[in-house]
Figure 1 (cartoon, helix red, strand yellow):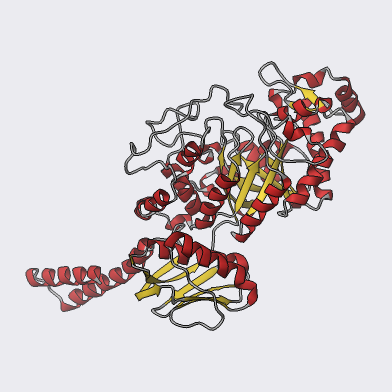
Figure 2 (figure 1 turned 180 degrees about the horizontal axis):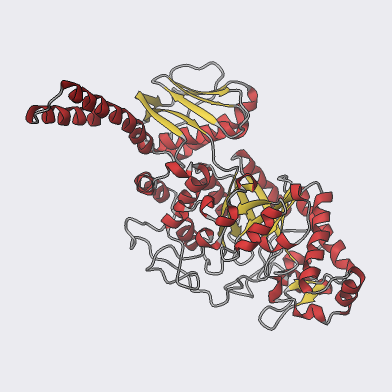
Length: 558
């Protein structure tokens, strides 16, 4: 309204002091001004909606919706009770208000209502002074609507035990189905509580895929009952201290975390790295060692030993039983850093002769194809880094993570073969890269480039020539947190926050509607939430507030 009256006032002033030849011209200008005003008002209202990621459509309603201990959360049927319970838990944890669940509402009510529709993640939120109604066709959409209401609630002014939530009417659905974060716990083990914290924040920003890098050179972090030495021996050490006591997740830990993520509509994708990055496993079971280099000893599994395939199949079988997402990441990257010994290995020489394999790359592809067959037999899809684009795999069951921003030809090859793709290029989605020009700890690209908040926010797959025309094969985007320079929870927070919020909006919102300045305004209101949760974030508004910690890594593989 203020904008409207400003335009009208300016028009009146112009009419007062300007001599126009025609009253018709005056009327045209008046109508034009009115049209401009009504075009601007929805955009301004949209920008002022505090929700991250920005909804597709958000219109400010009238009045406020009060949330008190006398309010109720009312699911339409029993299938929605777990989501209602999660909202109750979050309102108590974040806002210190215990809102009861009951089927017969009284007072103000948060109504969870089933709707029809084909988009499982779409939802609507309709609010007035008495009712906040979240409607969705599926659990995922209902959860997304609950999160939007929760974000409005935590941003609302509180008076005693009452939250006064401004009414908004939101219609929303994500741009991408895959909105991911990858955490490397081989190099540094963070433990259950920190992982749960990350899952909480992923849920708060509607991120829904947690890619868990559990095995690599420094340590093996997943209990495999058939091969206990993988953790008791392979779990020793980390990137900062090769003699650190063995640390790993038991299978009960995994089940607990998977269940925790499921409540938050997050799928967990385990990564069992092969045939490279196998040092921790090879220390535990050297019989399957395929060699390495002086810099990267015991780097590969041995593709020339038949026992290697049975051993890894056993590992993948136990892994599949723990993770119900029906998707296993096989790694598959950087094998050339430690496979020189394959040329002299008698078993690999026989393998090449038997199958007509010309070089190490063809041996690598053969290995990946065999292990992919194992994953498929376990009724899982196959995921791996973009080096596997050269392998021949079932197009409808293969997902490629495109990480090498300087290798668009691998992205193009993945599309040509019909593989689905998750976009996670180093620039801008490797969050171990520094995020400010003043930062000293962490990575930069060869010409000094790094990954500031805005580059994460501005990413668009449409700007990548190799991706143009292949939009239907792009599942989404993902940020990767490699932990060479992460040796504490504070350091993890410093690299993840606030870039996780920019990632969420890039994954969710329509690129044409995004506005970085508007995003920063909404982001500023998030910082008190980080403080409340003891998150050691990088404050882009006060860069010196938190000091970066850790030490620079001198030994990056990629």
